[in-house]
Image 1 (cartoon, rainbow, N blue to C red):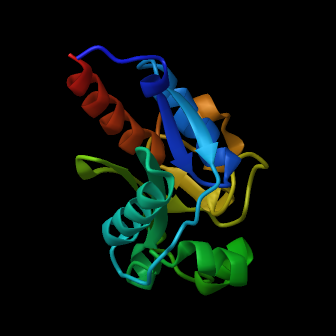
Image 2 (image 1 turned 180 degrees about the vertical axis):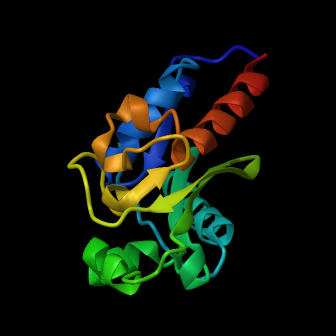
Length: 192
């Protein structure tokens, strides 16, 4: 199946330019560009990132009438039984990085993981692509790159927080890059 230039553009329903740049870096490597689109993004309450992302992608696709990507992610802290998980955005807005660090004061078990779910909705339905990166919560916030909980998350295999890394370096580890790589593989298979 031959695709035109327009089909090499992935519409991304987000206002978060950090996420856009991370996806652009990965999807650009397989010949796709990423363009943010302003569309209603409905986030339902659920304990499942997959359910949240799929629902939002369907709403965005129905609004746009074109295939569209939605991404949802969460930080799951083992000592807090997976909290904040799918509520990470709300927790970040309410108690922030310092609030999470306060919750972990005196806690030696600081393992955690970031999980990203990319939902790609179109006339075929919804495809889900998941990426996970394990790591630990730092003792203090470090770095000024990235966003959200990046200043306190140290991925396995690194001594830096995500906020101390460039986008290129972060994408070597990140949950979002792993999910985007799976999307890239799926797109490549469909164009053969």
